[in-house]
Length: 617
Image 1 (tube, rainbow, N blue to C red):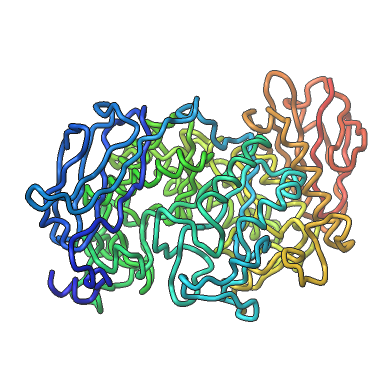
Image 2 (cartoon, one colour; image 1 turned 180 degrees about the vertical axis):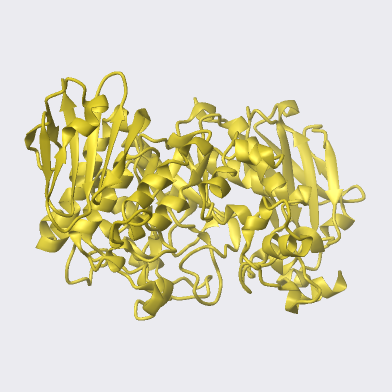
């Protein structure tokens, strides 16, 4: 352990006497379903002192670790009848230092808060690249990396205030929930804008704003009947995290003696999680290996670590009034520990939704991560994770639209994705998308062709699940990851900065090309808001023929016919084939064009066009 402390040394060594330097969580709430609270108390050699609570409050457990700078106190909040108490640090009978700990009252109905569902459309924002609402916080003296828009991988100054200022734009577009990539402090020297190497899990990065502004954003979304989704990272922290610099114990992270400073890169083969024939060495390096040199891999098997992560997640839900989590790199975590993590959160908030980034290639592999999965059960596992991301659909969508039609290429790839829906225990609670902040931009793949965009958006907006769109795609933004790396798929939104020559955040200032993308998106997503048949209805698929994919969404009240024509030429459909779904219906209305249509005999669909037809009895 001496080796660890030599490598990770804090300036706390300059403290002459033991003092409480940090307490996490800084406060808590009365009335939680689980009344047990673990309080981390940090200070130089603090474990060499006695700790006592005021008001005759009993400490249920006090745990010391290898590093004497930490003490973990457990209390039962049901047994505490005061709104605040003191944590007293004592040397003999002398009181050396104190911390006043507050137990707040929960908001009414907090436990029953609503979360994102298939009724929602999720708008993904990388805050540093969306809009700069407060230029004063672009660079801060207490944070290392300063803003410089000339650096593709640098900080550009986008922030929470920029998002708050543009909520009308997001709402009018038709989005109902907002997923931000991580906004907690990421104080790495370079490449910190993305936020995935967090250095303080209880603090919003000062270049994005404050904890209070984050809560303000959530509250303002809630008033609009919208939700804020936090991007939560359980797998790794930043190398500059204050606890990584002064590890509580060596097993707080996965430490590799054969690596430099504990580092050994993951092999990224998370398929080993459910491979019954996987070698132990491959599993070890997949799950315990570091995501990158600046991202130490967190050991969720350590009970103190797991409790810390669980309480931190609950703290943010309660404090910021959140409406959901998206969890990064989900299969890289210890899956048994994460099952406990997810259950603890959903026990406290039964309606709370958590979607895991399950970047795998088949429905069998992805579905195993959803709560109640039969494929997971076959491997003796239940994740307790409510939602997963449909990476199979994501992977096959561009192929389906680009390829020529044959037995197993073209639009049939889309159909084949949906034939695996039976593997998911809750198919409506699956996130569907064609791009995100880690992938090639859809409009780059198709050279900003609005026809390809409209086909893709129509699909994810009308199939089962929760559609997610990525900021800027609704105005045709491109980005070439192969040439420009991550920075190119995370370009600044035009108009988000005062110096920008054009403001696409104002629809009246959009170019004709941007308007084409935007108006289609706005029309489709706002129509979707009130369509229960799309949110929870059943699906009837018809095997694609001649590059045309037709499916119906229906329930006991209404029916919607969706047609995707991927051909370069108009196609005329013989509607007799769809008689089991059409029945006696003779007409409908295409919500995209606004035209009334006959659905009696034939239907002509223009080239490279989608139709969403509300059928009329």
